[in-house]
Length: 398
Image (cartoon, rainbow, N blue to C red; front, side, top):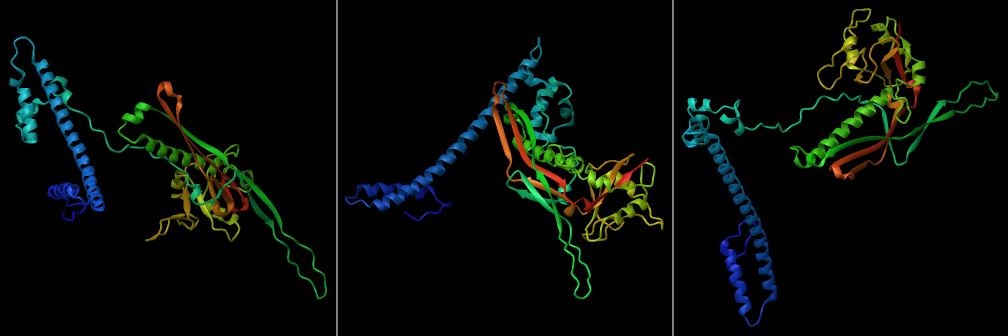
């Protein structure tokens, strides 16, 4: 038997193997190692053969199904054409037009093409189908990406203590042989407890089985967007009750807010002066929503220079008064007694904690009689201001 390879095995080689196997069994001394090698080769070819058989059966079944549809279509047309002494349906102009379209496609005569109408069911409307787009058109979900600029920590337990140094020792001057005073640093801590964020979506068994899209993947994608939108909202405005505590809602940050000089609004000078309320050494940025950005783009300083400047060529971001900014749509709008602008070093001032692990439950039993499956996904996280002096706000007053 000639040595076959995986992709070039021929029928002749298979027959040679069978013949060699038969001849081996006829010998008085059987070489079992050789027989084992031949049988493994034949088993490999049989597996390939079974694949070909399955494919052939599928093709035959497909042809049979098409034939059945054509037969049913002819019966339908025949029934539609029988009324009184009307001529055979195959002699009708509509049938001839359909037959010409099947043979010639768009090359058929324009007069025949006009007979194929989709506005009338009996003149061709039943034979047309709509086409479903392969992509779901989704509305934009505006997410406040605070996570991208804050300090993020991952923990294995439910809570984390964040130690904070409040003051440093005082270094004094003394004269020769004089005694120095005692001085030590003072410390405090912020406790961050994670809370569950849950997404639950019921879906029918029919939807999972018959939808043109992978509904489980769609549900998981929706869950990801819902988690991101929910956490972004609360990192900005959350009250801290079983949810993150937002930096805009933090009473310590609000206490140090700068009041705007406009009536329920602010001026370019207010935006500039806000930068002076932060200690030197932080790496600050502005945060506001896109409506506030649109307003800031119209502001000029007292020397006539616009506050908003486009980035230069290359990886240089646009700036406000020389500082970068982040659009967070959950920031308050410009209104009386609102805080539309935040300015600070959020890497130092705001901490987000994520608990490792995520719970995904597929409940097929609670609503089993109605064939409803409920997907419930939970994760645990929290966010809180851990260094209030690193963040300041601009408040619009009446």
